[in-house]
Structures are given as structure tokens and as C-alpha cells.
Length: 259
Image 1 (cartoon, rainbow, N blue to C red):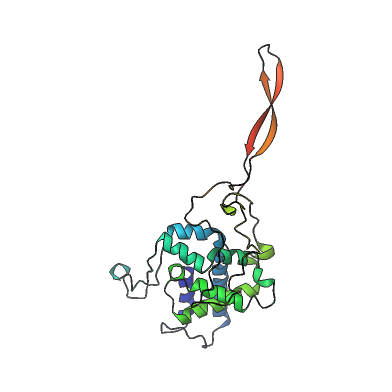
Image 2: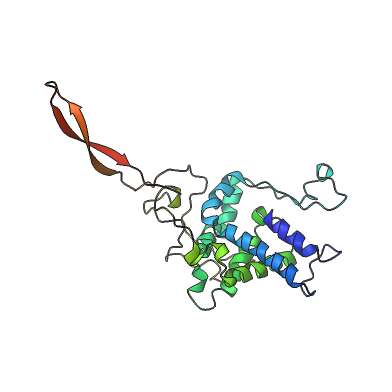
């Protein structure tokens, strides 16, 4: 829906339905586009978490209705709906490396090597925005428009993004870690896996498959599978048969907190 809102801002400059990137724009219009791009990129920075929800449940598609159109009378094709199911969305999320991209954005991993915030970032954005089940059936010019503005939003280093030093702290258990033997954090890109967009695409806009962990279509857990319950001794007063007070030690499971 936010992509559609941003698209509507841009199309408001023209009487046609076609993007005209070379057309001059006012500072106010550019500011509106930049603000929309920051909001979209901030959402993508949490994809390490919500990718699982999207795979499981999809989303509520909100088409851009033109004046004179009646949604109830329009076909799925006219509404630009993309049909998918949990299994197909899981494959789409893996192909565009949605969760890994969210983790890389959160930690500003594209700042670590000179130039990574240019072509690698733009290739990663291209893969995500080109995923029809996620972003809708966009035309090539529309995809390029979003990639350009989202990349600008990243390079702005706006604190509103919530990336890098401005990111929110996360727990090291529960749904913040993968359900594997390593319980590695979802919100960090492991050094084992390449930065999304770093590799050249091998088919269309998508990079070669990466065998990285994910929890798609798995039942959520409240604590990590390898986190051992901590034992903490407590003192509790208890009456014995002679009405004498004695102290016994109890062992209680201590669960870690989650956001």
C-alpha cells in the first residue's frame, strides 16, 4: 500500500498514468517523495521479522483506484492482484533474500565497504521490488523509480530510518533468533552469507541462490530452541512438622524477555 501511495504522489504531477522521471519537480514534491521513500525503507528494515508473517498470511492488497472506477466491478487483472500461497511466497522471499536484506539495512551493512551503497544496494532493492507477490505487478520504469528513491533514502542516513546507531535493541532469544541448532540472530546478517545484491544476478534481477536459514512456515516459539533455562535459587519459608521455620531452595525457570 505504501508503494501505491508513493506512486500516487509521483503521478499527481502529470495528467497521464506514465512516469516521466526527466520532468522537473518542485522542492516540495521532492520532499514528499523522499518522506515516502524513508517510510518504505524503514518498513523494509524490519523485514527480518515480518517476512515470516508475510509468507504465512500474505497481505491486504489495496489497488490504486482511478476516478470513475468501481472496485467491486473490476476483474483481478484490472485490480492488479497477484495470486500467491504460503509456499510460493516462501520461495519468493528466499529468491529476493527478503529477511537478509532487512537485516542488512538495519545494521547499515551497505556502509561497510566503499561502493556497496551504490550498485549492490540497488541490485538488492531491484530484486525485492521486482517480486510481484510482494510489491505488485510493477512496470520496469516503476521499479526503477522506487529503487532510485529508496537508495537515496538509505544514503541520506536519516535517523528516522532506524538503521545503524539509530536501530532498536533486540533480544537474543524467542522469535529474534532462528529455530536451528545455532540459534543465530535474525536481525544480523551472518558473515557466512553474502551481502544481498553483492553478487551479480544470474537470472533476471535475482542473484544466485544462497543456502541461508529461515523460519518460513514454521510454528513460532517464545524462546530459542537451544537456550537452556537458567536456574535461580530462591529462599522460601516453609513450616516443618515441629512448627520450626526452615529455608529451602527452589529452582525456577527464568525466561528471557522479547520485544
